[in-house]
Image 1 (tube, rainbow, N blue to C red):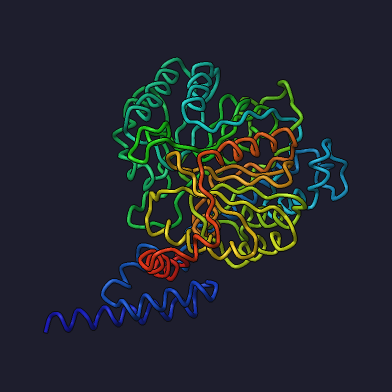
Image 2: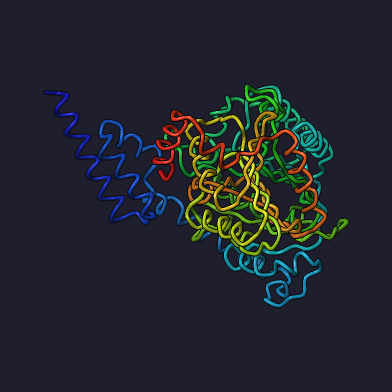
Length: 477
């Protein structure tokens, strides 16, 4: 009798959730159908899955204030900048920026992503080199250090970063560290792991400390030193990211930026820090220094998340794809595109553009891996070329178009990054930087295997079943 009563309660909850999904949440039809299938075909677990992965209705209440506050502060900052760059016909300083003018204007209008033209960029594809530079920058800091990461692990590298930050805090440097509650918990971290930094005078911010919710995580990975140097990319902080985890060698991409784009990274940090903590940083000179040695790379810092009206990073990807005339190279650990992205890539390939996508050969999340393989299979008969990276795990999130423009950051090519997580990417318009992205991609081809249409169609029945099940549930969230 108790079991029957419990099942009746669960069924009633599933009906309530189904009504909420259909009538109150603004989901796309594919996601709605997937959730209804889960709720009614798997009633014992459907409601639990919905509690962990669903409830988009609640995001309206959680993040509407953040969206309004972010827009207010961004507008205030935007009005202080040189408004000439907001003009649709402003003459840009590089041929690549001029060629991708429509993309720049889209992201400005869509995300208030102000274009900065005086930047120097260094590209890193290995964690050892990147963290050497980050440690050096921390040691040289004179005023402040701001770090924002999805995951900071309580392991050798994570503890070394905390020690380095604590040392600078003891010398009077302002240190602020913002991390996602779930991401760092998954990496073995907890608030106690950062006690040395707090005791030294550093400040800690824990983003969205709701451990039971998988959605709405802060997936960004950025660092700002003295408002003069910034880092953005796919690397979190932990031993995994220098190849010392069970997945072995770790292939990722990040960039170090000096120049005006660092101010945009600083603004991104301010917005997230102010939302997370009781401290409200203001736009002051020490955090936004003038001068420096400007470079020539135009950059936009673009943010996406549950607090944005549209999907700025995804739409930036789409605009780059639609602008391509020669080539599109994509690297991503997870490829679960929605129809708009899949159609854009297919149309580009059918139009004669050389479209190539590289994914890992091994999964860190098996469900996502098999769904990725399924969507890759859809691309092959349109002429898209796909590869599996065999030398460890590929975690880079990059696109480069016509060897001239591209993006790098935290956003994967999946529905979670496009709709559910807080992400940040740098969009760059520079043939020299584009050539570095292409060179890295081509070097990776030497340790990759092409997925041909013939090989894909000959895959075993067991893999087909895994793909079908994983694909069915891929729209959930």
